[in-house]
Image 1 (cartoon, rainbow, N blue to C red):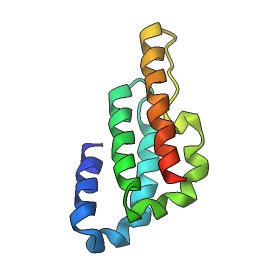
Image 2: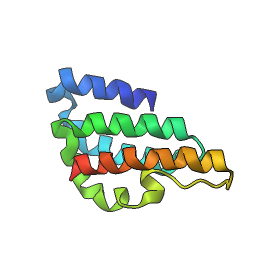
Image 3: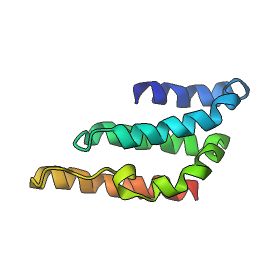
Image 4: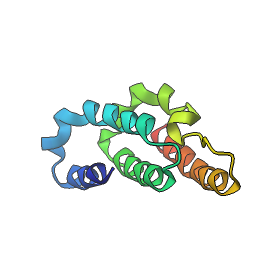
Length: 106
């Protein structure tokens, strides 16, 4: 996720050099969302913020074919395994960020 944050920085200054990787970058972001541990709320939050930065550029086109995956809440914000109140509250705090990220895409 830290590397993705760095890549979003590179997108601004090196757009032409990064253009060939547009599709694979979107594919890997979705893969990170799928594989991010459900209880790693801060990591998922950082992933969503980095994704929003990508969606603010022309590289958002790479995400169009992944809209169906992003509409799945389990992929977008994860689903808490534990039923503890603190875990579910943290998970619920991701929902607005996740859906605003999705809104940035559409």
